[in-house]
Structures are given as C-alpha cells and as structure tokens.
Image (cartoon, rainbow, N blue to C red):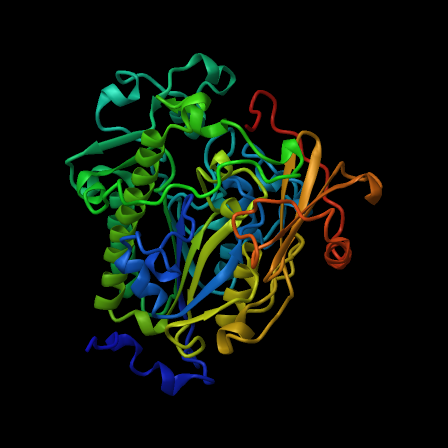
Length: 500
C-alpha cells in the first residue's frame, strides 16, 4: 500500500482552519510555457509526469481551467495583473502592459507591499519580440534564461543567429525573415543542466535555501520553466521514456464544419523552425516526431520541478507554502491540422491549474469549476490574508478560495477568453458543457457577428459548429457574453517591433 506524503498527514485535521494563522505563507509559483493538461494527473495515459502528478495529489486540480488568451505575453499579463486582454487592449507580444496601465500593481507588487520578498527565475513575464521584464514587480532583478537554445551548432544554422533566437533576445527584429531557421528539435545525451530548465531548477533550489534562512520574511518565488516551448530540446533520456509508435495521433485534423475560415490557422510560429513547412505537417512520421518531442519535453520539465519540490520538502517549508502550477496556455498537437497555440479552440486554451493550499484545499481533490488565469491573483491574495486587489488596472479575476474549500462550490458559471483574427475580435465563453465564440469587429452591431458553438459532451473534438442548429443555446450563451464589456482596441506595437 502506498503511504501518503508525510507533509500531508496533518492537513485533514486543519481543514476549515487556516494553516497560516499568525504567520504569512510563502508562495511558490510554477509557470510552464506551452504546457497543456497532458499530464498523468489529468488522465493522460501516455504522459510520464510522476512529480507533477504527486503535486496534484497535494492539492486541488482544476479540470476546466482556461487561459484568457492563447499567446505567451498577453497570458502572462493576465496572470500578473488579474486583467483580461480585452480589458487591457494588449493582444500581441511586443506591447508592455505598462503601456496600457502605467501605474498597474502586479500580483508580486501587491505581495511586496505587504512584506514579501518576490523573486523570479526564468520566464514569468515575456521578454522578447520587443517586450521586456518589469523591474517593479520583483525585489531583485529577474534571472532571465534562454527560451531558444541549442547545444549542437548544426541545429542553429551552424551557430548563426536564428529567427526565434532573435525574437526572444530582441535582436534584429526588423529583419526576422532574412534570418535562418533553427531546428525544431534536438535530442542529445547531455545532463539536465545543459538546458535552461535544469539551470532554472538549480537556481530555484538556491533561492529556497536562502529563503529558509530568512525566517521573518516570507518569499514569493516564481519559477518560469520554458519547455515544452519550441524548439523541443531535452536530454535524450526523456525521449527514451516514450515510444513514438504508441503515442496518439490526433483524431480529427480538419477545420470544424461550418466554422469561419479565419477562426483556424495555418503555419505560424511552427514554420519558423526547420525542417517544418505547412505542406509537410500532415505527414504521419513528422507528426509522430513532433508529438514525441512534446511529451519528452514535458517529462523533462516534470523532473526539474520535482527537484524543486523535493528541496521545498527537505527544508520543511511545504506546510507554510502555497504552491501554484500554471500553464500559460494550451497547445495544438495536430488537432484540426493546427500546431502551437493562437486560436479560440479547446486545445489552445485549456490549461493545467493546480493549487496546493495547506489547511484549505483537501489533498487529491479536483473541481469542474470553470477557472481563468486572472483568478490566480485574487485567490493568492485571499489565501495569504492580504487585501483584495483593486488595481488601478481592472481586476477581472475572482477568488477561487470557496472552491478550494469545497470542490462543488461555484464562484462563476463560465470562463472567458479571446483571440483576435483578421480585424475581428473573437470573444469566447466556456461553460462546463459549451463554448460560444463571437467574432465581430470591435464596436460593430451584435447582428454582424459570426458565431461558433461547440458541445463538449457530444463533440469533444469540435467537429461541427452548432451555432445555426441550436439557436436556443446560442441565445442563452450570448446573454452571458453580454455581461462582459466590449474589447478595448489594440494598443499599437512600438515602432519596428511588431508582434506576430
């Protein structure tokens, strides 16, 4: 019989009574780039993620958690500000959030103002594409690690600056198409520390050790792991955990029947990597390589997070630490024929969200409460006993603490997200059963909108747009969508630094 985690034995005795009475809890925020819920804890039988699975067993797993926009920089704004993209008017990679709200008080600033020490290692806010980190959000400068990294020069066009390396290091942004492409994957027999996520874990461990010596100062440590973001670079032993012949290929590889043509995507980010071309992405062998590479990178980051959690336990910090695991958005793995993110469909927007709150959330629980990235700010503030955030930026999130206490409790009846396409804004709501997407130009009359409706109980693969066939459901969901204000117009990217 498997013994329970010793750090969790006392938790049932504490439920209903704050585990942090008289103390200020630490916060460990684990952000993972491009991580969808392809984890054992979420029922994926092919995932090799023992450490993240155990983490889910320590707290609550949100089964219907969604990003507010399926692209890196806006999603990270949503996390740090508690504001949706449509409230900020930032939908691209290049615009810094302080263009929209110069005096914004971020999640970590809120904690700093109440006595916490906030540190970031890796990718928390988006650095690259003309954007930058935010010094005011941290007590000490962020340790920025590489997102695009190759160990074999042959994979980086024989050591030259590649397109995606240039994007993520703010170099030669006006001439990206003139730069060579780097490889989409790299499989080498190297130690974990050879790539950024191993170094991020090491630095995170050092920060925990230092924090353990500061007894009177609670920490807010944010670790931003970069895999499984492209390129898929992970030590070979993580590739060896998976048999590509057994990994699942996508069931449905066409656009949804009846969907607007602009709602999908072709190419995009993925074809900035060699040898990928739009015409080749339907090749089964290539699909298997990409899916294998994604799973390998997830196993790699799982191992690195496992090292951090082991040190948290060794230092006896776990019972006084709130832990959040968050993926910034989902990822298309060939479903609909799409790859990466940048749509309003399920696979691009559903994310893993696990919250470990000792004495509040019972270990090993889950909830179907529709949750959003913007909810993390007010949830952590309440768990830590801090005042509710009030901005000056719009605070769109709601606290999930009632759900952490009782998995069947509900604090809202839907999640909200968006994605712009060809001058139209796609505003979407996702209930436990349906998703409605309204596509229209901002400010245009409601009757000009094109609509998408999907029923995930009957059609989880989004094979058919049901909007025309189910007007009663559409009317009900449009009434919910009408509670939300129109999207703010997009802020212009800085000159010469256009977002993709």
